[in-house]
Amino acid sequence: MKEELPERCISCGITLTGVGGTRFPCPSCGTVIARCNRCKKQSNVYTCKACGFSGP
Image 1: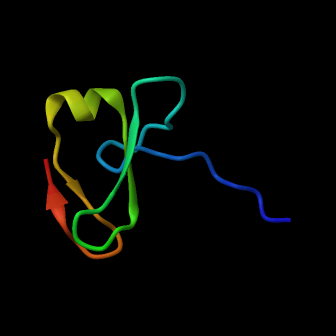
Image 2: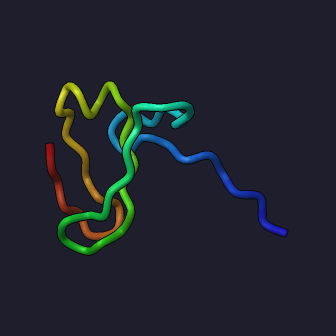
């Protein structure tokens, strides 16, 4: 059985735990993107690993 790795913020790499983080589909390709509360509030740039789309 494959062990599932904890989800990490795509902007800063912190492990997502607790409340405040968000998960949403990439506007370009639909891949799920996860962001921590801090990066979301600061509008830090993210880049989709699947298609290269960048957003705030």
